Image (cartoon, rainbow, N blue to C red; front, side, top):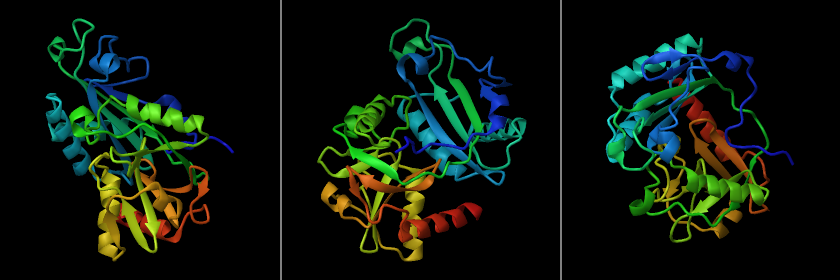
Length: 298
C-alpha cells in the first residue's frame, strides 16, 4: 500500500512562486534564509504555530496566538511583536501570495542568531528570528491512516512539556521513524503510565458504543482542533470523555481518528495491523467533520 502522512496535500503550481515573511520583510525564496548560527537551526530553540486559512480568515486565530505567546513566556523569549502586528503580517503575506482559502501557514519564532555555537540563551543577542511559510494547500484525500504503537513516550512536564509547541521535535520524529519502519503512516504514542496518548503529529480519538474518547490531556499537545472537537461533541450531545484507556480498548473500537490544524479530522483504519471498525471513515467521525466545517464557516 502507498505511503502517506497526515499532512499530504494536492500539488499546486502556485507554490512554485511563493513569498515569505522574514524579520520584517516579505521576501522571495532566495532571501528566505537564516543564519547558520540561528538558535532554531542550531538547537531547536524556538516555538511555532500552524494556521489554516478558510474563506479569507485564519481559523481560530486568537486561540493560536494565545498558545504562541504562552509558549514564548514559558521559554523566556521576547517575540518582539504584538498580537496585532502578527495579525497584520499574516494579512500582508496572505495578500502578497494571493491567497483566499485552502492555505496553510507555519509561523515560527526562534531566539535568533547566536554569537557562538553553544546553547546558553545569553549567546543569542540579535533579537528573535520571526519567519512565516505560507502555502496553497488542499489536504489530499487518501485511505484511512495506519498507526503503529511505538516505544517512544510523550513525557512528563519536567523533561519537555508536551504542551510546549517547540522546534525541538526529535522525540516525535524518532517515533514517526519507528512507525514507518513498522509499515505504518504515523506513530501511536503512549503516556508514562502506558495509556494511549497521542500520535507523533496529531491528537488521537476513538469511538466506542457511541462515545468519543480521547486521552486525559495530561501528556499530549493541547491541540486547538482537539479542543474544538471536544466542545462540539458536548454542544451536539455526543458523549465525549477525556480519560485513560488502553490499546485493548483501541483495537476493539468502532472508529478512530486524529485531529490537527492541517487535516482537521482524519480517519484511522488500522492500529498495529488490527482493522478498526470496518477500516473506513465512520459515521461519528463523519458527523464531527460536518460539525467542525460548520464551526469554521461561522
